[in-house]
Image (cartoon, rainbow, N blue to C red; front, side):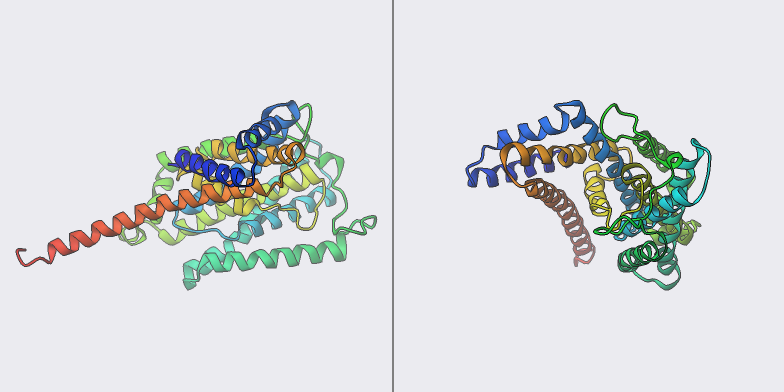
Length: 345
């Protein structure tokens, strides 16, 4: 179904391009040329795919437990601040420093996700609302601390911290561009979590909690603990994204550095169709769109908004499929209820 939704999104975007007298084939050719037609294009695609895979994985973990982590961007933001803080305030050896910064950002993201998880478990508060509101709190707190204590005195136009130490910089593993080892970490995390979800008792309990929490509770599953655990894992992955962006791409904390990974993660998760390992090809596909958008703008003079239209069209058709599934399931339940209540029964 995600493949069908992607094709449908391409057709809708093609009709829009034809309405403004633009050949869609030229647009898609420029898109592929910008994303895969050169070494720099491939590097840019992998650079974008790295955080997108992790973001999709974070959202998918929440889905498995029946949770909706709408505030993933807040956890990314907190992870970015803590990762950069470790990068410029603590002296560690070269190989250990970036690892400590990234893991510290991940722990910060997990702790930030722990708040809405606890509110959901003990007070029944919607994790959608609480995590989303904490996103704004994360922005305010991090920006305040940077402005008051860690601001780079040479930055007048933008709010940013001092640079991280050279030992904390996450180096690129590609000849051009900025592709870090986090690419392999994101792929490895997808495969590992996919295996644990399908083969371990803990993964089974998380999936059971998301599928039918009442049944899981009466089966002896500690559903509250599993909800908190899944949400904290989601926040941990978000914190990894923020920390790797701060010490790898920006090499410092930059206010509003997140270009929307939190929301892009939902598109990756939808395209993966519930598969944790499926976040890898879905993230790579979104990486192609992001990397190729600049070439579309440069070569054809079109706005990169056409890429957003394509993404929105894909979301529309994926969501329509899920809506059709829910409606068909509701119709079948109504038919069974009518059959049981018929006079002949």
